[in-house]
Length: 154
Image (cartoon, rainbow, N blue to C red):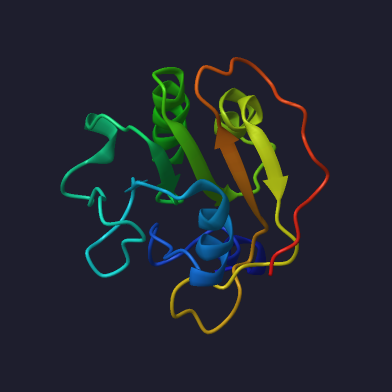
């Protein structure tokens, strides 16, 4: 495998949210649903597992979403935006891939915070090979938002 390819591949599409990142953001939002979780890494009492298929569920309240980072990410971002139009506040932790179709179609419709540095997900030995952003879809908000310059990671 060449050196470039290693930056875009992984053995998994699922990256456990770093607890300190979740706690800092949760302090502002008080999440009621973790849309993409497992029983072992759920950040809220109410959560959807892969088997429950969050894409087919109704989301409500204040939703935390750290979606699978593979090809499905566009479907999850579409769902997050759609659920915000129905009244949910959805906060998404995603790779900062501003040149992708899913980013241009959905992420830039939210309020975007670019995190400083690279996150270390779950029990990984090193940080991710990509930067991360937090995208917030507020209820009923249409179109592009004013984008802050950055938010520093704790």
